[in-house]
Amino acid sequence: MKTVFWRKLVTSKNLPFGYRLLCGILLVVSLFYRFAVAVRNTLYDKSIIKITKVPAAVISIGNITTGGTGKTPLVAWLRNYFAGRNIKVAVLTRGYKKKNDIADEPAMLAKASPDAIVLVNPDRVAAAKKTITENESKLLVMDDGFQHRKLARDVNIVAVDATEPFGNEKLLPAGLLREPLNSLKRADAVIITRANQNSPEKIDEIKKIISKIKPDMVFAAAVHKPMCVKLIKDNQIPLNQLAGKKIYAFCGIGNPDAFFQTLTDMALNIVGTKVYNDHHVYTNDDIATIYEDASYKKAEFVLTTHKDWIKTALLCIDKFQIPFAAMLVELEFVEGQEKIIALVNKAIEKYVSR
Image 1 (cartoon, rainbow, N blue to C red):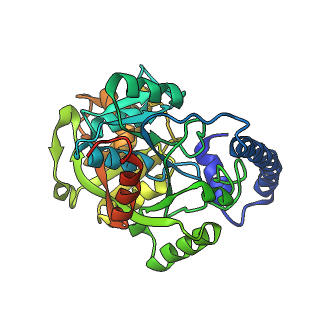
Image 2: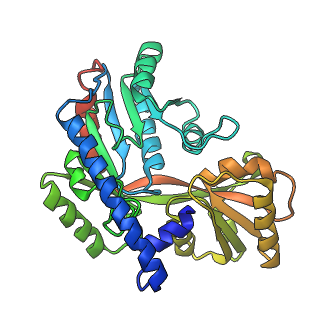
Image 3: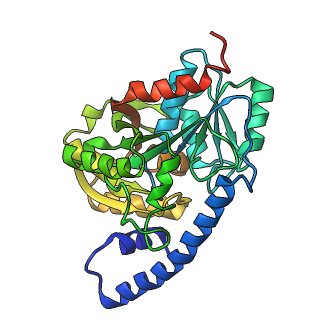
């Protein structure tokens, strides 16, 4: 089942009978998934499965739902903030769907922080030990780490997307939840991302739901702030040059609607869109299809996310009359930044001499 179809299936209402029947089957499967998750977490909670502590502060950035909640921009922000304060920081990531030895999230992190130490290894413990020994890293930022419990962490931060905070509140594969909401008890802080794409009332409602699970949860909120547009060969143009242009947009991310909403919020003239599965590996045929559709709709720019750009730039370089470009964004806190910084500072105190 393709991710795009599955996501629409489990999040849509008023489905035809055949689709409702399929959802019922997925719900049964999710009961077995729930049991497996519960057993695994119990084994970790009771230390039956070993959790390894390393001599460095470990900050986990994760989520409780599938799809894009803004983890990677958050990891990049944390890395850059503390590296800018002379802390030796390394990023631990497992990578996903490599093609030609390039994985999308690690490549994004490397682009966002050119001098960053980024270790791609599903074995986070081995990666942590390696960078502590070889690079004397004092702060380890673990990308997508909430469910990867083998490596002990000092601070557990969960990114919750304001546009789809809890999916449909059902577990995989019947819904978007990777774990039951009750698992948020393990988190030290929740950062509500894309906070500008929902109302203040909805943001407060999200906080209330989470606070019932963990009353002392630390909250922060952030937005994905568009910065500029990146063209082939590292050329960049300011956002105002898109004003009045006909834009064709495509992406293959966990929450495509959030990307398109960002473009809508910028008052861009979107003449067409195309969505691929999350972590889609693009081919020449895909790029040709995008270009043909964009040409038919008389687009003046083809725009995508930075994550998709990394995987498509070489496929469209100097081939087409319509420019292919990426929207570059960065995380910007609108609430609670000082609380997150304080949590991390407390974690690294014993590893960094002042």
